[in-house]
Length: 266
View 1 (cartoon, rainbow, N blue to C red):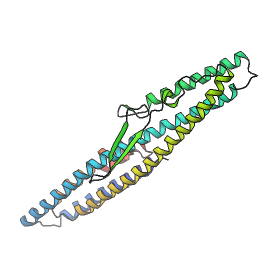
View 2: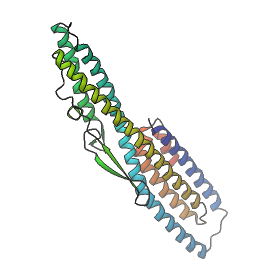
View 3: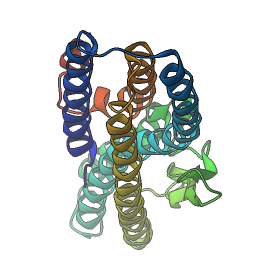
């Protein structure tokens, strides 16, 4: 499962709405007279909105960061899944008693190359400098809202050692049979981790959409501010919040052209 595209598309729609709201405010500013008393009231309301936005900023940062990690993990897990399946095919061939020595050597060479490929995937699957499938993430707490609600995420190491494949080889029929058993277990573990990541990704996607919808509601509230300078400042704060979180966590990784997002931001 990939949630990048949905959230990336949503972010663009959100920014379009935000831009339209700004245009509307600018047009209305030429028709609105604001008294000193109204300015004081508006300033109080704007400050309350600013506090709300800052509260959601932290939750969005935590959620989008986790989304980025899950998306990165999903990509690496798929690569490892494909590799262990190929290794199982080789191990199955190597259980035959009819192989010549040269044939077994060639199977072992391919098997070793695939094995090392798993470790390369683990080393290269990184997010913010951390190996997502190398045990660097460990247990991660994700803030889901402005209250104390949190989600605990754990990503296991998926290198050869953690998959139990560190010593697997096809040098003999017996070794190939043992490798086949170990690979069956590894394949199941990889599948379980993939399902876990998909489930967490879906939950995070729902959380991100809920948080962003709340930000959209705040945007609608900004339109009620009669002080166009205050409204414009609040819009800028919301845009900065969305861009800093959504672009780093979702939009930049989706099929949505990130330049179109930047153009929307003006």
